[in-house]
Length: 343
View 1 (tube, rainbow, N blue to C red):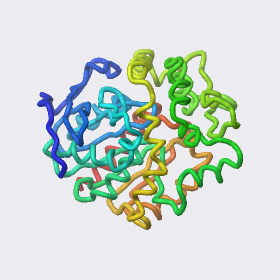
View 2: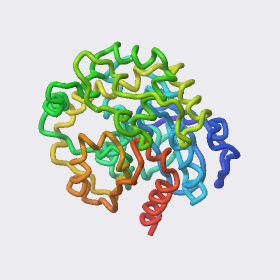
View 3: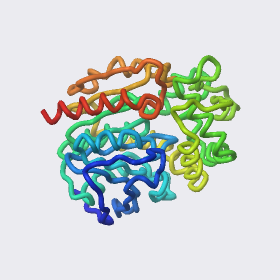
View 4: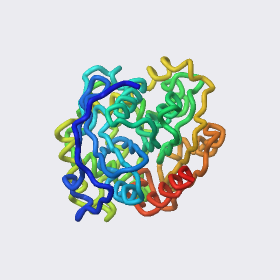
């Protein structure tokens, strides 16, 4: 196991923050892993569950899952992945490929002194979770993916597949391949960007307000999103403020570099052609998630991709932020899955 060093963090086996939207109510730690300094929240005692955020999120997206899992008897570790939040942000684009992201999780396990975990990933984090489970089944005994049904390695480079799917338009992963321009556009008004993205990808948006996965050549990526006049109650002003403060401080480049490694990931994983994840698994998605309009077939085919699939579910009225939009449903599904694993 890749070794890491962790700062000691005092914690208890119960957790009931007075205000779950207060980021300071959580136990924050740092560890030196895989050549970077990683920030993570560490709460509870018991079997380890690692929660990985997506983009444009942070560890904070799981704040309402952490107490439920801790109080059910689990140790819950929630990192800012490299490039995000308080974790280091290496400059090189190739520092964000899946071999490095999985290496971070292996190093974090070593720093925690743990040898087994259930890994849960949302969006971009689902790619890391799936890869970690596939590459290190000795460490990751089960996997849960939220909102993004990650497929196995395809037969062609992702960029080739995107162009075929877009049919002359521009898919957002294609747009992110530009170095500099998307970073500047997203950072020009961070509050507007995050309000627009979080709203348009959620189940609260309707009609023309919903995220457009494909844009016209020459359009800005921001044209695919709509800023709401008032934000839905599932994301408080305090919560939005934390996201805005962190992304204002860090910018978006580290996060976007994950997408710039998609072709590289394909190139360095030829040895995984035909591989599947055989550990127990579950998928939780949103029936109102705009992203499924283009990749819904991957949801339909999950049973073939995941031989150990225990359950797949689409939550009615929920979009791409399932953990924040539908807290109780997601918590219940996670606890049921974890309970089955413990027998």
